[in-house]
Length: 215
Image (cartoon, rainbow, N blue to C red; front, side):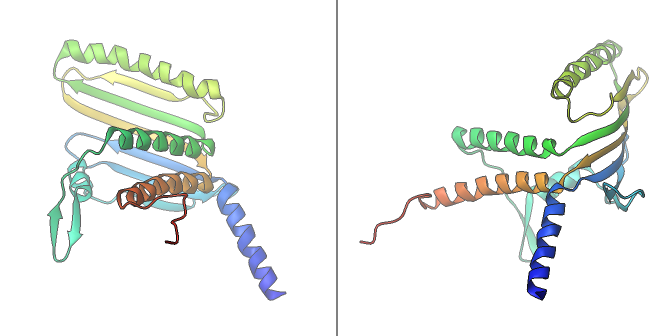
């Protein structure tokens, strides 16, 4: 009886992990000359508080992130590995898998509030004005995609774009409240991981889905 209760408890936990929505409150700030700042609160869907707080590491920059992703720890030092492009078929297959994984993740996402303030300057007044007119149009065009699906966005986003003719750089303040289902994220990760595993096995000459002969 104890074993049955334990197995039943594990099954209920996995079921809740897969389908139970979690609420995320996200704040993000970008400014030239300073590292990105951001924090988020994670909580179960029915929990009224903000839950657990997570912050971006201090001093994180795009350059340091690229440096960490392009190097591997080997022994006591680091050895840089150059990125090598593979075949076109491999890249096409990876693109399809990533699109499918993103779609699986978005199935469990519901955005209840999205507010952003974008201010930018290019140093060229004419180019800045041109981009300030193009960006809102692209945003309105992109908004039609989730609006047709009618599932992700529960309210219309409030995004404001303003040009800065006196300075060069990009400033962004973003606030977002959304819910997501961890099971959909796990499913997307497993799909991408499975693609890399199959690709690795094929390079090693392992034939998938077939039995080897006994002689």
